[in-house]
Amino acid sequence: MERTIFRTVRKSVAALAAVSLLSVTVACSSTPSNEAQDGPVEIRFSWWGNEGRAQLTTKAIAEFEAANPDIKVKPEYGDISGYFDKLATQVAANDAPDVITMGGAYPAEYANRGALLDLSEVSESLDLSAMDPGALENGQVQGTQYGVSTGANALAIVVNPAVFAAAGVPLPDDSTWSWDDFAKTAADITAKSPKGTYGTATVLTHDSLDAFARQRGESLYTQDGRLGLDKDTVQDYFDFSLKLSESGAAPNASETVEKLNVSTEQTLMGMGQAGMMLTWSNSLSALSKASGADLELLKLPGETPTAGIWLQSSQFYTLSARSKHPEAAAKLVDFLVNKESAAKIIQSDRGVPSNSGMRTAIQDLLTPQGKVEAEYIDQIGKMDFAPTYIGPTGSTAVSEITARMNTDVLFKRLSPEKAAEQWISESNAAIGK
Image 1: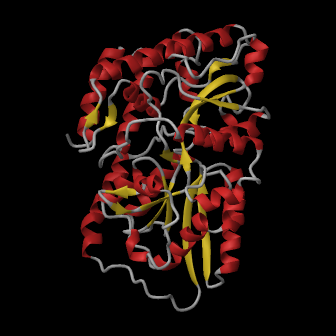
Image 2: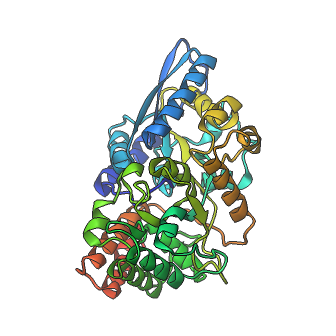
Image 3: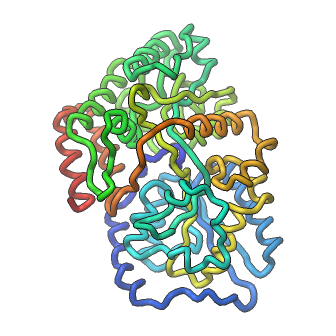
């Protein structure tokens, strides 16, 4: 997601396209009323995640309901693998949850299709004044606030020092290491570990393509909504992915596909069978719990001389433009991001809080892994990195294109060069360029 553990979201593009019908429907509908609701109301709140997240969120909901007895919250959650497929169907059927958790380019995707509420319309119930400016900008689409950041997040290499030690491979220096160093280290771990344990749990993700581009002074998207990277960068990305698989540094094609969109507990890192995993920093606590190991975070390889990393909102809380109870929904979001009682329950599960007061409130409560996540985000925040541009309408399909092309490369149905050409062509078509 999360920008979660996985952002290789396999979703129905056709279902999402149906949401475009709302751009006409919503435009013709009346603006949601900001007047107080009479009597008890029920709102629906959707999110994705594991059982641990569900338990924390349910506890926070109970606190909210105790403070707001006239509002009942119906939770809707599940694994990320089917989350956005279900959401696209719900929105197209005018049956969207009132509060919708989103990630990546989805806020822009749905906002541009008229499915999300302009949060200025519920400003009396949702106070965003304490949010970090950068976090606020992450939730804006063309200057309009549609999303509220749940917390900060960044790409990282999660490492299991115990696997390194068992293989007799030293931990790398993340201030200097390159992608070649990453590949060699991963291959060494696989070669010196029991069968079924790999140096890296995955090959590459859609997010690592973004980092690849940024390290070359390019970007996945430009400010005006076009692709910002060239064919050579995409080809090198697929070349490297294939190299990891062929060398044994990462699982082979079949094993890689089997591990797409699995739960935290089913990942190789979660099972203690990987030395490294490229994922999002807020995955550390869940992966540590699943593996039973003290995992650590390293910066991405290849960050010198040009940084490819960036601070990203882990997720966003958004409101449906068709909600019958927008003020009640806004009160829930306000509670989740601005109230200490909620912050002390959720802590860093959805990223390091974007409200400085909430960061202070949870500082002494964080688990050792939570503190590592917070320290990592603080370290990344001090780096000089290029701006990040939210993906244009259609960009959510690009992550699926990346996953599909990468699978074809791993199974050798396409060469890295042909995959790069096809990726450029299909991605341009997806974003209408």
